[in-house]
Each structure stands twice: as C-alpha cells, then as structure tokens.
Image: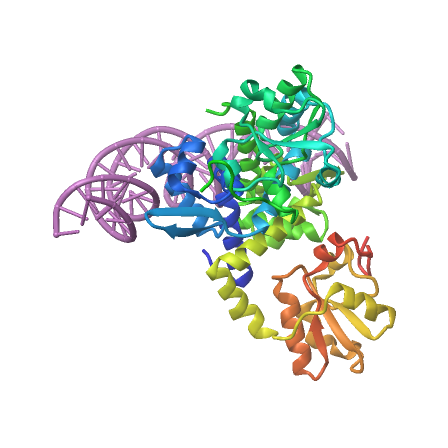
Length: 225
Length: 225
DNA sequence: CAGTTATTCAATTATTCACTTGAATGATGA
DNA sequence: TCATCATTCAAGTGAATAATTGAATAACTG
C-alpha cells in the first residue's frame, strides 16, 4: 500500500510530518521549544502532561523530523529541528485564522476584546529602541527569559507584575511581549498596566517570531546559568 | 476536555488543520487542485480514489479551511482556499527533505539519479524567454494545461512525447515543467529528450510554484473551454 | 559497584479514522 | 413532473492512535 511510485512514497512521508503536527499537545510542546531548548521534564511540567506522555509525543516529533535532541549529562534537551518549523506553524495559524470561523471567533472574542490597539511592529520597536523612547517588558516566566530575550528587555513575569509596578518608569511607554501571537500573558499585562495608568502596548507576536525574523536575541539573565 | 483556555482552543483548531493535511491522499488531492480547480469526479479519477472516498476527503479539507468550493450547474469545483496553503506545503516538503532520511533517499535515489543537472530557475527562464533563446514545454495532460500554463509554453503530454518529437525545434534548448518539485513527468521528459539528442533541462518546481511566485499564467488552450 | 535520576519502552484500553456500501440531496433537462 | 447525473450522507467494519501504567535503559554520584 505504500509504494506505487516515488511520488506516493514522498506524499506518505509528508503526511507523517503533517499528522505529527496534528495534535494540540504537540503544538503546545513546539511552542514551548520555540522559546528555547528544554528537557522532557520541564516540557512536561509546562504543558501539564505526564512525563511519559510528553516523552512519547516528543519522540513522535523527533521521528517526524520536527525536533532534534542534544544530550547533556542525564538530561536530554529538545529543540525545533529546522527554521522551517516556524514557517509551518505560521502558515497553519494563518490558514486557521482566515478560514475557520471558530478560530476567528476566539481571536475576536478573546484577544481583540482585550486589546483593540494595533500591536507595535518589530520594525517600529527597533527604531524606538535606538531612540530609547520605550521600555521593553518580557512578561514570561524567568526561566524562559533566561533562555533568550529581546535586547534591553526587563523581565517581570505576569504573576509578579502587580507587585513590581514600582520598577517601571511611568514616563516611558511600555512594550510588552511573551511567547507568540496567541500567548495571553502580554494581553493581560497590557490590560493590567493600562488600568494602573501606564501607557502600554503589545509587541506583534512574540520572541520566537522575533528570532525567526533574524533580529538579535540576548541569552542569560539574573537567574540564568 | 476542549476548553481550558483560549490558547488550548486555538491549538486544537490548528491541530485540525494539520491533521487534515496528514494523509497521503489528501496531499495528492491538494497537488491536483494546485494545478487548477477541479470537480470531485475528475479529482477522484486523477488520484485513483473512489468518488465517495474522494468526496469524504475533500469535505475534510473543506472543514479544515484548506479548500473552498464553487457550484456550477451540477458540478462542484474544489480549489485551495488560501495562498498560504502553498506555503504550508512548501514548508512541509522542506522539513521532510532535510530531516527525514527516507525522503532524502527517495529524492537522491529516484530524482537526482535521473537528472543531475541543476534545474532552470524561474528567474533565468524569464530572462531567456525575453530573448526567445528557449522553448518551454509543458508535459502535463492536456486538461491540466488548459487550466493554466506558462506564457508561450507548448503542450505535449509525456505519453505523447515520443510520437511528437518532430514538433520540437532541435536548435533551441528545451525547458520542461510539470506539476511540482516531485512530479516525475518532467524528469521523464528530459531523459527522453536528451536520449534523442535534444538539449533539455527542467524548470525548478512546477506550475503552482510559478503562479505562487506571482508570475504570469495563461488560461485556456487547444481543447480548453 | 550500587544507588539515583532522567528518559524511554512495552502492554493495555478507549477513542478516532479510513474505506466501502447503498441510500439521499440538489440541480438539470425532457 | 420525472428521470438523470454529480455529489453527499449514514452506517458498519477493520485499522490506527492516544494516554496510562509499570518496567527497563542510560548516564551520573557516592
């Protein structure tokens, strides 16, 4: 059943890659790995999966050529295998957003309702960073910040934001970002900040897209190794 | 199980799109539709599926937002719903080709062994078309040619090629193309032509990629409507 | 070397998917 | 209106997939 010709054999292989992407847990694992390489345990914990289950999904991703691993001592670090993985995910998002009513509803109903302002483009942020007319705020957890973040960004995880507002300069506009276009952290952060009188907007998308655009990323941080 | 938050809901929807791509038959149907819109019957015949089965797969593709339909009389024409579908397929191909050993083997063993010459890039073909220093040969079946082809291309389906060699000018280099990067027709055509003393090369990829690059496509032909 | 820890494997069960068959729509044309 | 044709629906069967559990690797630590 698998070999009528070379074309069928190739399509069967392409189908394996696509099928592997076809599971919400694996997409979430990929989103996590897009922040930076991770061990099985951390990925399991971040996604709420059991370790065995996460391990199984990660191996499917590896068999499909979507992620690779690196061993360091007893830990195995997983990361996306290819830049094209991000293209794939972006195309997937675009198609779903434009052609699936349910996705459009969620995006409008949940995300746009919390922030009807246009996000700041990467280009614009770069310009304003040079003029120092803006503060960049990374609202992801500290470990993700340590794996890579925007140059000059300060890190206040969303859960700590209310308690640490005093660290922010009320005279500067704040640009917040997190994991990607559908990560809720930056939406919540912007809402919180505006409610307290700060001028705040979101960055378009998140760190992985910034990196994929070839823009500079800083590794390490206060608690980073 | 389906709604812990908006992000999970979105990932579940993205997974539906990816899962739908995860079947060799549906990928083949999409490749066919990438040549131009088609009825269920024609798609079933071209892919060797039963009509009922093709219809089911097409409806899955439609539910996933990957294709749309248009009714004309008693026929329903299917076509890709979105330009991003081609990006998706291209990313899928790239990842599979670079990261799956089996795909690399098929590509090397089957395709490269028949044509170790570099294909002609779209850009180069455009340049040489302007200078008229080349003949463009479409070796797809006539019905696909009629749905859209390169400007100035002549159509000799592969099966008829040997019988119609006299129509070709032996003094011009021939650039052959067909459905896409893994379509065997142009490989076979180039091999046949070289064996008969013609100077022949392939165009990189095929018609859908030419169209996706924003280059001009001519609709209609000898038997076209 | 034995113990510890991170990860993977193997076996199980519940669920989902693919394909076939035969009947049902929905538009056309006599 | 009735017959026809393209397409879709519904039901059933066999195969593939997902998540769980407990055992098995493989590398470090004492």
